[in-house]
Structures are given as structure tokens and as C-alpha cells.
Length: 72
Image (cartoon, rainbow, N blue to C red; front, top):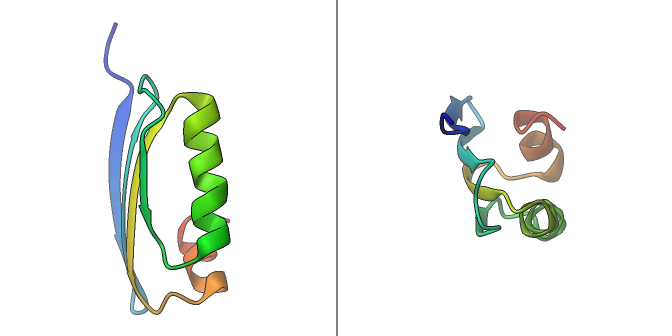
């Protein structure tokens, strides 16, 4: 079975975001978005879905900008 992993980086004028996802993980997660509620919700997805997720967001971390950059 091939690995089900992906990494993506997105840089805009406001933010620099990098994401790594492993769908066959253990539920470990690391978030640095600066938005506590978003971190909490992503942690729940990782933990209950047994998905490894690593997200780092740097820059203008207003809620709407980070959510837009993450596809929200």
C-alpha cells in the first residue's frame, strides 16, 4: 500500500503556511496558527480521525486570513 501523506506550503503577502498530513497516522498533531479555536478543532480532527497533522502559520494571523488560507 502506498503512503497516504502530503505536504503543502502556501505563501501570500499576509501569511506563510505549511501543512503536512499523514492519513495513516496515530493522531499526533502540532499546530501553530495563533487561533486557539482553530487549533482546538484541528486537534479534534487529528485525534479522533487518527490522522497526523502538522500546521505552521506565520504572519498576519487574523482569524479570517488564516481560515481563508487553510481553505475555510
